Image (cartoon, rainbow, N blue to C red):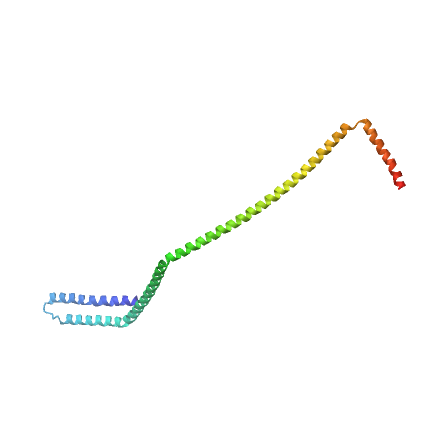
Length: 200
């Protein structure tokens, strides 16, 4: 940056110097009229030589590094562009390949999804059948247990009813004379049994 600023200053001075000398020469010619133009021509050539030498020096000093850096940057940019182009071409080829295989991939995915759906339906059927079998077995056990409990309750109820009925019948037939006869028979059996036992 400093080099460019120095070059601009030198160029400005070199451009302004001939203009200033030309004006000075015009002023002198107007004033004197008879002065020769050779000194102004010498200054012009001196300024030109100074400008050319300064520019040549700056160019010789800065141009190789500038152009070398610029060339290196251009080569790098070309290499980067080549890589980007190769990458883009590879991606485009991949996209083209995928688009070409898209129908077959869709068919494969459709087949896989149908297979998975069929397998899931079969699994659900098996699971539902197992659950139904469990529920049926549980219901049968509960029905059997309820039947046993009902039969047991019925037997108890029947036995109670039979006892109540027998008690009522006995009470209906039992008279004081029957009671006395039963007691006498019982007492008689008690008295006879020991003697019978002792006899044996």
